[in-house]
Length: 118
Length: 109
Image 1 (tube, each protein chain N blue to C red):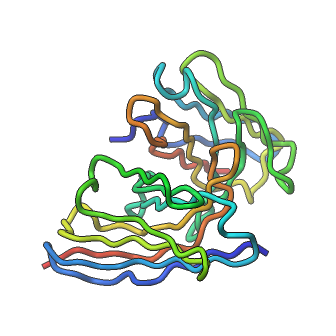
Image 2: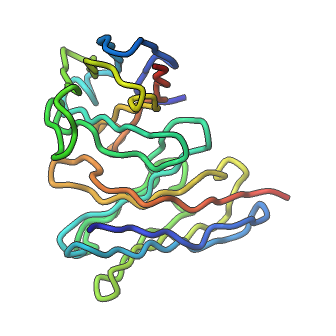
C-alpha cells in the first residue's frame, strides 16, 4: 500500500524557517517524481515545487522561488521542503504528492499544517 | 486567484447527472491533458480522472471526463450521497512551466 506521511509543520513567525519531510513507503520511491502542493483550508490547490526521480530537475512556483528548496533522499525514501523567509501568505496545509507517469498526482499524503503568524 | 476557473458550487439529487466545468487557456487545458481530483471533507485529494478521460482502478464508471478546446468537464451520473465533496481540475501549464489547478467546486447532493 502506497503511503506518504508528512511532518515538520508548525507555527513560525514571519521571516522564519521550517523544514517539511515526507516519508514514502509501499512503492519504489526512486521510480517517481514527487511534488509539494499546498492548500489554504477551504480554498483551492496550489502547486509549490517538484523534483524528478534522480534530483536532476527541480521546479518551483513563482511565489516561492528563491525562498523554498525541494530535495529528496532516495536511500531513505524521503522528500523534503526547506522553507525560508516565510510569509503570512505561506500559511497552508502542505501535501506531499506522487507524480504519476501521466503527469497527474496519483497519491497524496494527509498534509502538514504550516502557520506563519506573529 | 486560480489559473483554472471552476464554478464554486454545484448540486443535484440522488440518481441525477451533474457536470462540473473547468475553463482554462491555450497554455494549459488547450494543449495538455486534464486531471480531476475529489476531496472528501477533512481528507486529502484523491485522483479521480487522469489524462482527461481515464479512471484509476477503483473509481466507478459513474465518473467521466471530457475536454473541448480550452475547457474540460467532469460528469457524475447516478449521483450518490457519498459523492458530496470538493472537486478540483488540474493541468500542466506550458507558460508557467508547472501544474495549475482550479479553485474547486463544492458538490452538494
